[in-house]
Length: 396
Ligand SMILES: Cc1cc2nc3c(=O)[nH]c(=O)nc-3n(C[C@H](O)[C@H](O)[C@H](O)COP(=O)(O)OP(=O)(O)OC[C@H]3O[C@@H](n4cnc5c(N)ncnc54)[C@H](O)[C@@H]3O)c2cc1C
Image (tube, rainbow, N blue to C red; front, side):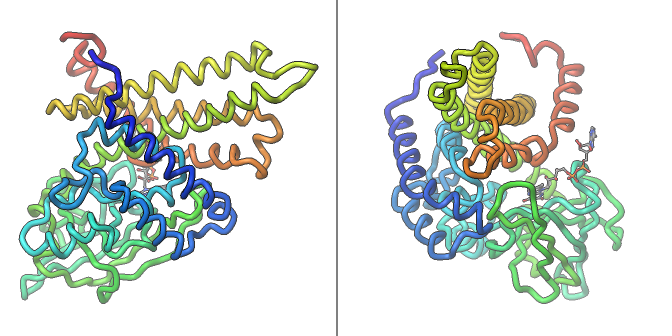
């Protein structure tokens, strides 16, 4: 077992940390106050991140991406967690893995521009009636007499929808024309360009946190799609979406949650060292120390779970259950750490003059998106009952 970081990983960490400190942290307060990132800032941080080779790290090198292993990628994603969602998207990109299933002309039209960052893509699975039950969607596509697809339905909570040029849309393509029939095996994935007739963007759904990232409603009213908008095979959409979300969960939820918790913990420890009450540092009080100790323990435990799941992926192993465990543990660790940070900062933790209250609000979504804690606990418990000790014992 080797737990050390190699020289290249250390260099990547240093580069990302410096970039975040110099280019992204200075934008955070204004983003929080105005709720919007100016276009010029977005362009500037994108160009600079690209210059440093930090854009689309998850994509293959031959397409212009980072070509990183899973372990290298999550080492970087952990660092991304030190800043805010919108700035991560604009600087480092959010190129979804299912796009790698593009074939023929699809590669130049959707995949390569996404990797280059000239076109932005969002993933759209959730509907007002289908969240955790992602196979229960009503959006559907049916072939017309000309062999084109006709898309109908709606989606909501679509992150980054406003900045996106096209969308990966899950839709039922089974026999029933109203989209009520069929299960996961009848779901396909389409690449839908913004601006197509019948495709309208609804309101930006205001959230508790993640200020600056828009979350949109989308409506499809008889949107005609050419055959080449189908990604992968018909009926493969659910598999594509779930496969992608698996890695997204590990990288964008697990690793970023660890990074965010690390960032908050550092501030919390510095405050405990600095703030004096009753003539001594508050960090000298045992009840404050317990909160620091628990945070440090939990962050380290979560980090090794993230690294282990990435190592499994790099060794061709099926890490679905380990990623479910990471999703629950890292998200809940972050929640506990930011809650303790608010407590240790006292009134200043609740006050908008410091970013602690923002971290507290931003952390809450980690337990909800990309599968709620309850859904993942269900996956873990069912797997444990079916597979037994292989899930929690060594060398089985
Ligand atoms: C900020 C934000 C960004 C998002 N971005 C995107 C995006 O870009 N693209 C996209 O497609 N979606 C996105 N989503 C949607 C997100 O993935 C869903 O909100 C999430 O999957 C939960 O679905 P839901 O909100 O419908 O809750 P529901 O599924 O209605 O769940 C409500 C409650 O019931 C519980 N529950 C449901 N089923 C079970 C069960 N079987 N066992 C136990 N408990 C259960 C849940 O755990 C939860 O506590 C985003 C959501 C938010 C808030």
